[in-house]
Image (cartoon, rainbow, N blue to C red; front, top):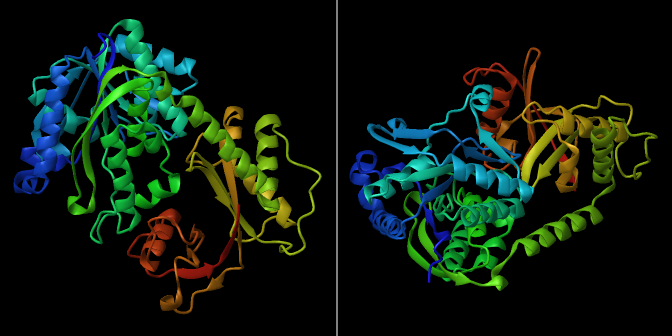
Amino acid sequence: MNPEKGVALTGLVPHPPLLIPRVGGKQIEEVLQTKEAVTQLAQAVVNVKPDVIVVISPHGPVFQDGIVVNFAPTVEGDFANFGAPEEKLQFIVDGLFAGAVQDEAEELEVPIIPLTIDLVKRFRLTTGLDHGSLVPLYYLKKAGWHGKIVPVTMGILPSDKLYSFGIAVQRAAQNLGRRVVVIASGDLSHRLTPDAPNGFNPRGQEFDSAITQALEAGDVANLLGITPELREEAGECGYRPLVMMAGAVDGYTLEPSLLSYEGPFGVGYGVALWKTVGVDASRRYLAGLQQQRQTYLAQVRQQESPLVRLARAAAELYVEQQEILSPIPDLPNNLPQQAGVFVTVKQAGNLRGCIGTFLPTQPSLAQEVIANAIQAVSNDPRFEPVDREELAELEYSVDVLSEPREVQDLSQHDPKVHGIIVAKGERRGLLLPDLEGVDTTEEQIAIAKRKAGIRPDDDDVALAQFEVTRYQ
């Protein structure tokens, strides 16, 4: 029996814009199974008569350090970017409920980023709905939904934080006596076939099978157990919204339904709903997630190489005390005395900072690592400086570069083995080898040119290559 208040239903909806008839045209026939399933899910949502629908998208303003909640009084959007500007949607935002979610999230130590006017101006964002939200909302409105929503964008956070956000939604619903539906918008693997958007990877189907089996069984534990490596190789966009959705039914007994799955265009589209039918304390998973994360981080630290331990020590001392590590420790004799070094910092598997030098700039390798580790956590222009609260969550790697040499024959250049340096005058762009999504020499050179500010069609450039030894 459904509770009178709380989370009544959650669902996964894919978001290819071609699901909208005026966008897809005849192509919609290739996703008819998905279209019918989304229509069925939308009707199920309307049938439970929610007071508010929380829509979680992976395509709004995405930040490394928090989950974005849209507090605009009203939100709207259209499909103009996909050739159908006449398809417009507008909804009222339930600001009271959004505020209650923020309060509960902060109690659970989940960072929330309100989408305010100041934030919009600072980062040149918009309060408008993205297609990740618009596609499910189109079908909900078509099914008769005209109520309030809370638009949310996933954060690049550890799974326990994402899951805790869902718990915050559940608590807010219970405290305010609201009947709530949570919709996770997301596609599955983007690497199912050779002509897929992100290229082919055989693990794409493995990922989709694991997700659809968990959805069909209402198996939250197995959903949460999918490894970051599998997710990365699959090239997915829907996993984080699903984890947030799963948190919203923490402690509930579920009536699960996998309504459809298909993989046209090399992309997996799954439609599923979980209806809550009771309470079961054994289905609470947050403590296990948190312990799993702490165990993993402890193992990472135990296995760190001397160079990585040095990078961590230098970074942590600088963040905590604004001091540079000294005295300089001795390193193993098998390491070079000097070299170019890149220090990479990740949080929950996502890049948090990366700074390096392709030639040595310091008297010793140890000093090179220390200098670049400090820069990586404090001066990477792509990110805010790391703060103390983040330090326990960070993972480091150190790449030691061989001396660059001129590229004599591009046919002998392997982007999985060789890094590339593109130079013209004072402008230089460097790309490390074996990067995700960079499979050809041409792609590698194009990205390096872009980093250097060199025109894509300018072939009057000098090319150098190098190898990398990675330490973790």
